[in-house]
Each structure stands twice: as C-alpha cells, then as structure tokens.
Image (cartoon, rainbow, N blue to C red):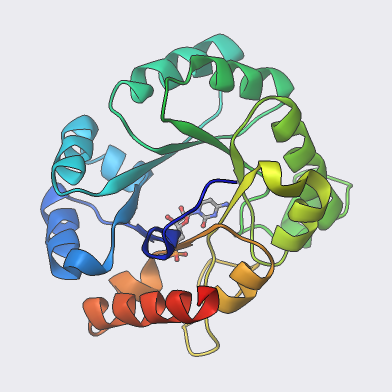
Length: 234
Ligand code: C5P
C-alpha cells in the first residue's frame, strides 16, 4: 500500500449548497485541510467541474462523491468523463458488472471507491429494504466483490473497517465517514466511530463533514483532527 501523508488522511466533506459557501470554507480552513469531498449537494449547485478545477488550483485533492449507480455501460462512460477532470476519488454502488465497468472506465490517477453499506443505514433499515444478511457479513461480501472487480477501495464505517480489512487484506483502501465523538449532536449517521477507532480499525482515510462545517470555529476543529491524526500515526 503506498504511503499516505498523514495530513491527507483527513478528507473534509464540503456539504454546502453553493460554490461561494464551499469556497469560503476551503479558504477558512486554509493549510489545515488538503483533501475535500464534494458530493451531490454541490453537484446540484451546477458547474461542478469548475469547482473541481478551483479546488485543484488551490492545491487540494478532490473526492467526487457522486455514488454512481446505473447499468454498467452508463457508469463506465460517466467514470470516463469524470476522470478527465483529474479528481482523485469517485464513489460507485453496485454489483460486479457495474464495478468492473467503473474500473474499466477510469483513467490514470482516479481511484474508484465502492460504497459497501451507507453509514446512515442500520440493521433495521436493511431488513426493511429486503436484505436478510447480517450487516458485517454484507459489508465484507461487498468488499470482496469490489476487490475482485478491480476496484481501488471501499467506503465503510469505522465499525466494519476491521472486518473489511480481514476480508480483503491490504489491497483495498478503506475510507471511513460517520466520524463522531460522544459530544457531537445526534443526526442521520447511525454506525459512527471516533477518528481513533476508525484508524485503529485500519481505515486509511476518514471523511468528516458536520463536525468541522458546523463547529463554532471550523479551522480549530480541523486543526484538532489533524493533531489527533498526527498523534495516532506518530
Ligand atoms: O457530516 P458527516 O461527517 O456525517 O459527513 C459524512 C459525509 O460522508 C457526507 O457527505 C456523506 O454523504 C458521506 N458518506 C457517508 N456514508 C457513506 C458514504 C458517504 O456518510 N457510506
């Protein structure tokens, strides 16, 4: 597994409605953050590619969290188009054929991450959706399928990251959202873990949104996360 600079292990989710607000947060966080995730909310703000260009011009890495899920041919073409922008990560859902198509469509430098089971879903929600399988084994099964399909990594909660590592070894990157401490307000995330729990469970990157975006002082909050990462990997 290639070396990951500790500062890049923190990916901040820019979940904001406009480019202006997203850019303000990036400027406020400054050198504290070098990797940003832009997802569906900013996609709906329009001109998504120009925001990617702007982030790259600021020297930032970009995770396009668009969660592609469609027939294989469509996903392949979408991934191919996105890879021309030079983004570092993109997410896909899907079965073997969809993931193989995504792996086929990616250009150099783009890493495809497969979503295992959204961190906002719990066992009850999965049951309601018709999944009979136990959550951890479902996550492991999807991670194995992703590896077989030539995918670079998976998105998995801190509660399942260790099980994913056990299932797929060191070949896949593990990116973990749903990072919370006991002090954070309750929200839609169900399967949460602290930053230390996520890295101890062998996550490679953590994604943090609201705990930084909604902090009274976002820059101090980001700095505190970076200090914890530094201590963890020291
Ligand atoms: O605000 P919060 O820290 O919960 O942000 C987590 C981010 O990670 C959100 O942008 C969410 O869309 C994303 N995400 C997630 N669970 C996944 C995949 C992505 O929470 N399985």
